[in-house]
Image (cartoon, rainbow, N blue to C red; front, side):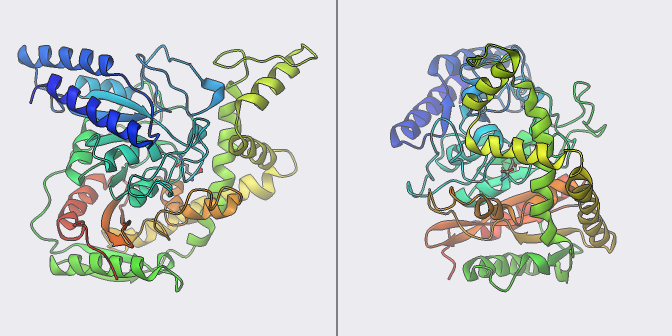
Length: 465
Ligand code: GLN
């Protein structure tokens, strides 16, 4: 298929999603798709080798593109277009991909349901009353709806794996530093990772391969080659999978437990072994994350001051304070304001030691837990991705802690900087369940290969009882 045909197909699919009211896109245009496709077809005709020729990829709207606005789903950036592009986007274009759409998200990627978007919530593609997860809910919904085979999201604390699990698609968070953060609007710089959704593990792997690898424009990018997964192994002989008991609490949803038992069964059927392990500091992951991430956010979001980007409002006093107060008061939504306040508080003199410094120490303990189990010879960890299936819109918006607890099985990985993947593992009452594999540092390739082997056995749409 030519890129031109692929562009037309993508435009028709995006139109259907918009007509259904998914609200997954914030910006896309058929003209832009056609123009990109024409250029790709010309390059292919000239003999260029393009590994993603004509593949439409949607981009979360906190990753900058030069030919379309980037809003972070915030009023403060409404109408803003970046003068430069994110490295991940440039690499997708180099590989021949079509940048299909900018997708809706929780404002500045802060949330777990995509209800905190200034431009309205995203609907779950299987049930309009439910949320797709978040914060990369628009990207997850578009892949789940079949509009694009792959999409970029971002992870600071689970924002790709959690919506992937809710929507029944694949979500991969690479190890910290393996994909450049250049052009990803900063939230928590020590945590942020451009991450990938795919309809299949293979699709996600191909996109990851195109976008990963060192980048001189990001000083935290690792000097490691691009993530290049091999094919799914025929069996898992010699592979040791750990089941951390802290991720299987007594009150875990029984359907999710059964689904994970099936994945463990698939590991054994392929010749691998499964063993119980412990990550004793797991219960501190959510509180630690919700100190460190807001602390970094409060510093990173200081740049939205009414001077440099987007919205500019001046209060009645007419001075610089009133500029900040009016711009930020009007431009940021309630969840972003909450994060900035919490972050400023935990960094303030007198509270820094009690909160921020302590959280940094606990972060080391959490990373150490993972290092220990992997040092014991376990190759990968297997856990549920989320404690529940997709919840109803409105159910958690009044209670931030209930919202934060949606991240209970995902945030430790971000604190430790490890690679992890969520794959579909059946359904409960029609709603997808995700299984998560967590790998040691630099284990991205192996993790993706094993996930591809398991995907064949467990991802068929099967109701779990
Ligand atoms: N739920 C997390 C938060 O609200 C997700 C953040 C993310 O990964 N972008 O901070």
